[in-house]
Length: 187
Image 1 (tube, rainbow, N blue to C red):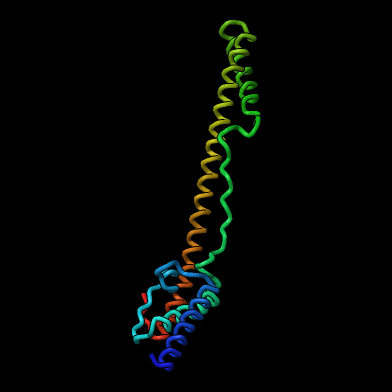
Image 2 (cartoon, rainbow, N blue to C red; image 1 turned 120 degrees about the vertical axis):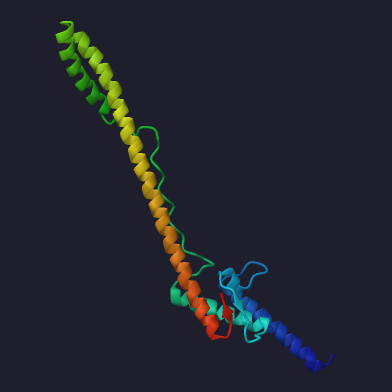
C-alpha cells in the first residue's frame, strides 16, 4: 500500500470519527440507526452521497432543526407527573351523616307521633335511617368527585401528548426541509 493511499484512509477514518463525535455531542442515535432515522426521518442519498457525508449532513440538519423548532427529540422536555387521584377513603367527616341524622330524626318524630303516639321512638328510627342516607350521599359525592378528577387527568395527559406530537412533527418538518435541500430523498 502506498503512503498516499494510507494517508487517504487515515484521513477518512479521522473524518468519520470527527462526524461521529459531533453527532454524539448532541445525542447518540441507537446502534444501527442513522441520526435521521432515530429522529423518525428516513433519508436516502439521492445524489450518491457517501455515508460519512450523509452522517455529517444529518448531524448539521439535526442541529439546525433543533435550533429552529426549539425541540430536541433526543432529550424531550420533562412533563409534570399527573396529580394523584383522590383516595377512595373519605378525607374526613363532611357532616353528611349528621345532617341526615337531623333530617331523619325530625321526620321520624313526626311520623312516630302520628302513627304510634311515640315521637322519641320515631325520632330514633328516623335518625338511624338519616345517618345511612347521609353516608350514602357522601359516598356518592366522593365517587363523583373522583370520576371528575380522573377525567381531568386523562384530558391533561391527552393535551400533553398532543403538544409533544406537535413538537415532534415540527422538528421532523425542519429536518426534512434541510435534508431535501442537501439532495436527499426524505420520508
